[in-house]
Amino acid sequence: MEESLTPSILVNGFRKCGLVPWNPEAVTIPGKAIEKKDNTEKILFLKRGLHFLNESIPADTLIVFQSTIGDWSGDTTDKSLFNLWHSTKTEVEALQKKDSDLTQEDRTASPLTADFNIPAPISDLATADMELDTKRKPKEKLPTVAFGEDYVIYLKRKMEKKENLAKQKLERANERKRKKAEKDALMEQKKLEGEDRKRRKFQDTQAKKTRRHLCYSCLLTQVLKSHSSSRKRH
Image (cartoon, rainbow, N blue to C red):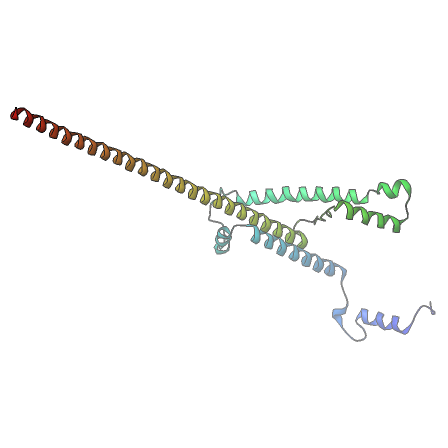
């Protein structure tokens, strides 16, 4: 006992008890410490949950929520909050199952090392060579705790990626519509130009026929006049 006690141990003991230096706050009551820790964790949990809701609820709905004081006076049949809860719950369960499968797969011994008992350094080199040869994409390690900070960040990035993909899809659809409209307009213009050419050709043909008819009429009139004059002379 005497050999294990040192001056530093005694000093730390007095300091922990709040005796030297005198500090009543240094004495930690177990019940209050646990309660304080629980409150801190609860506040952190609620903050993360509120942050997730603020990021997930549509902006117009969030504005209505923030402007409401007291009891809710909006539409009581609105199912958007339930839909958010259900989709989040479904996604969390899917991610947890996927993460569980990945963890189980990681824990399974590799056939190269399990069957032939290859030393670890050589096994690492062989695995690295295999990854270089097959160019396998490393598997993503997903957060497993719902509303955890990592999960909130992951979910936010995933939602942003989904929104960007939807935006790009909409832009591609609009681009296809624009090109189709341009193509249809060009086809319509060509159709009108074709009809105009046909109309002009028809008018030219009719004009030529009219001119030929007039020429024939004039020629016939001259022949008749010439014949009439010849008869009179005889």
